Amino acid sequence: MNTVLITGCSTGFGREIAAYFLEQGWSVIATMRDPAANTLPASDHLRVLPLDVTDPASISAAIAQAGPIDVLVNNAGIGWLNAVEGTPMEAVRRIFDANLFGTIAMMQAVLPGMRERGSGAIVNIGSSSTYKPLPLLSVYRASKAAMNALTESAAHELAEVGIRARMVLPGMAPSTSFAASAQSQIAEAGGFPAAYADFGERTLAAMYEAANGDVTTARDVAEAVFRAATDPDCPMFLPAGADAIAWSQGA
Image 1 (cartoon, rainbow, N blue to C red):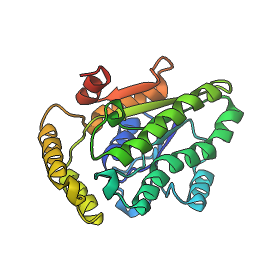
Image 2: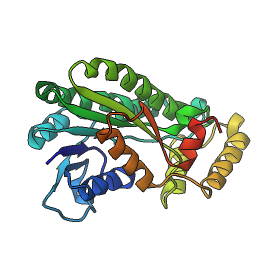
Image 3: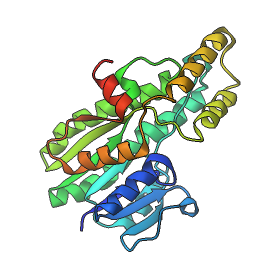
Image 4: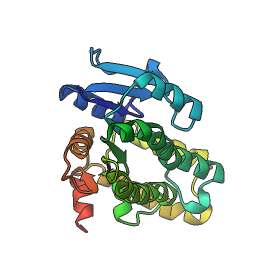
């Protein structure tokens, strides 16, 4: 039975990806910072492990408990919504630490085992915001664009040792926490900078309106991740969701 390790499984995409792999008969290692937050149904093929991708000791402990891993899905990360001028450098570092540096650290942790076995796949979860220059997402988008570059170059290195690397790029996936999360991030930064306040409110309203359209579901992302993990002919960048597909085509 193949084994997949997925980061950030307490909610959202990560939880749905874990559930989907279980449906396909895989052994799933669902990781999250606090295993008490797990809401996945019990299964003989499911293990839940604590993991903070920004903590080297936590990564080492999780990998030691996990055993051989056939597929790594780097889903854990954080978002941010504000103008670049209104984003504190502490927040910038936190975003890149989780989204980019955590992804690199997890790749480095699993690659020796995959390389020794001569097989494996790494699927990194990016963002379809990298297809177009969306305002208020500048720092978040930069972290995800860096993931694109990382994965694309690493894929050429890893192909030499029998390992595949791919990116899945979800579109807008609203949830009950979408508005609350955006508002908390804006509040953390002390609101939009005054010079951008009107623009920020207009852009935010447009995002909420777009979220009522044909957008990405967590199931869309899970299906795309499974394809990226199992299909050797999967493209390097795989959009997930109707809006992501449209953006990838220039719409």
